[in-house]
Image (cartoon, rainbow, N blue to C red; front, side):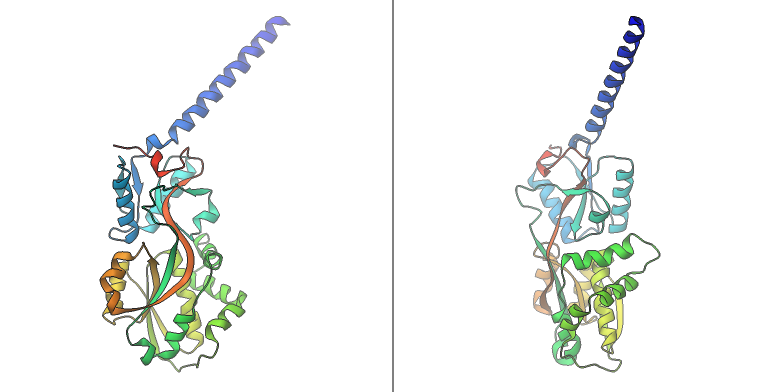
Length: 293
């Protein structure tokens, strides 16, 4: 019996050693030292500007890789599936935070900014030329959880279109919609064009507002544009409005460039956040933990 016990003890010890080695390998694999790049979004955006400023401020030995939101999310999901290390530029509200266990890296120097608001902006003169549309856009305001509710319906189900998710939210929240439209006169087929950036956040708000405008009698056109082109088009009067400007940081450079050529109606959503985000299984909590030069 003693020799059998001895074999069992050896096997148990070997199992514990192998498990410990595996855990150590996983921990080392997901440590900050394995990060060589930060996966970003569209080049020229405010998000990419502050991301690069953060890399410089912390003297990080990582590259900032331009991408797009869909491509960045694909890389993030692939990394999570394989439990690999990854750092991305991401923001909240975003449906990925409801689907996966993610965390923002702490930013002691505050170079990534703090709380962000999403502003509604319209072309100069819209208040006089189209007061109903102007008032609706000025009245539109909702919460982070409202946007997440719309996003989660279409972002996680390819069979659900953003417009359908927006329609469902409107049906479920008649009191909020009534507050936006209170006292507004209906129109008969007046045209209005809204620009949006192809982000899930902006798809949510823009589709909700478009449907409410249509219910007021408007013929609404939604035009996808890059952030910089959207600001330029609004300043020149080629479009009527947009609900895409993350401030005071995300769209700061465009706001500064076109400030006197647009009408900023203020926040339609408050309490947003952007920064460097990692899966929670990674052994890293702060930007300061990333590799330095």
